[in-house]
Length: 433
Image (tube, rainbow, N blue to C red):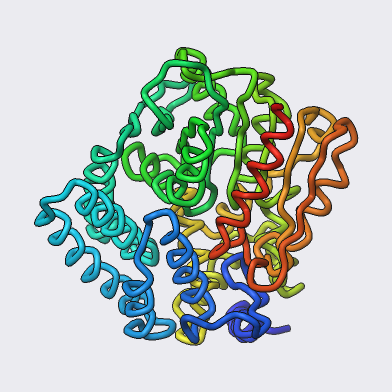
């Protein structure tokens, strides 16, 4: 019989091999050769492509992103973080120096995006002061840009019946008080509501819609300011936010849609399915049937068996050793570090256990509103789950399953947000006509 130590060494070697083949955790993405690679590191490529795609909605400048891509060293988190911190600081200075309101607004938005990128790979060390400093910088820059909008977004803090407050930003397309269709947008595992402004809200405002972003436990600002990790029962977040919307005369509650992005696809479906009848249409990108199944995709059988055995000490030892191994790819390392931080646990076993509660078992028949979901063929975070999700919906006459492939086929269609927004708003306008 092998000793526990030798077992861990053997399993670690298998894990590193699996990770090197991009088959472990939700944090690596398949590249099929039809998209220009912005980094030899596939995780960095994905982040850079996402940021580049935000430029169409004033979230970045192409030259900035391409310059950063050239400077960042693959697999080097410090290189990624420091490159964007330097870029963000430079943009912030330019924004303060701008005399024209539009110039300042656009440059502050860019600086905010770059501060968020500077923070992105920091979460392996919870005591790093840059985690809070960079977020304070991004918030200050975003707020300065927001204040210069023709109709500034309104930040709100929303009490709940639980041990946290939800936070949100409400954006209106104009100053009128007439009731308008409204899209409520929530992100997932790592994205912020400030990201959502550039990904979705600008498109909504251009079409005459209100757009409200929000965050709950585990998400960037709530995690920092309230020190609470993700919860599975997301209706505790959404219902108080919907309560807030009912207080506004410019919201048409008969035309209220809820959108969930990335892991937010589970969060939104859970809230809309079982607990929030005031939502009239659901948009999930992607559809998710089980968060844990997505994270376990590609795990070696030995690791799954170790997790199923309930041996927390041994499982944590293997995962922690994986994080310290220099051969571990960026996606694997980031995926686990981000999970520990956002679920607020130092135990990998506990993190993966908490994801087990995030599934829609027993709830599909409660989803009765029109539902749109994206099926991205390159999505290795939750592969094929959108198809499974749509198949489970039996009590709806309007279920749209839209497939994205080729360069548009990454997780959440990063880099192709205009295509997604076109499809979503065409569908929503048909639903609410």
